[in-house]
Length: 187
Image 1: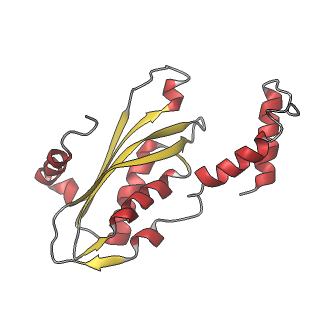
Image 2: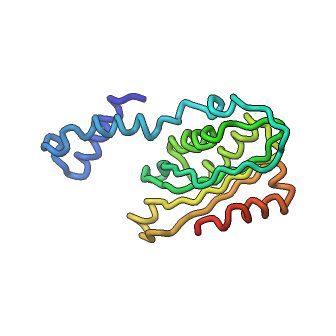
């Protein structure tokens, strides 16, 4: 990331809205924003491979679910946050990954300018690519600040997206089992 460009951009925005960029409260803001962007957009140049390539052999091939993975992302349309919970499931085909790696994968994919629909699909696709499971299913529930603090202004409304791959696409009973095990997403 180019911190100089970010800082200059923040200065221009502050000047554009009529602020005095030299006043005490704003003097360090461009540098703070630059440091924050390094953190919240830290997934731009990375892939989930580093998290999903270390696996463990298993005999059992029952469904693995990691639910309620909290994430924060930035809407690429307005550069405002959206945040919520991701629920990730896969059917192992002889190998599993450490559970923390599923949460790390969601976090990595969220750390770039993003839309929820793509984030959901990218997470499911990463599981399929690196774990080679029989199937993967990702459901994401999120609140979007671009809908709550501006525009239509509907706080509390949530968007739910789903991406099914492999066995979850072809076996409706498997998908139904996921939702039964989840006990009602969002409740």
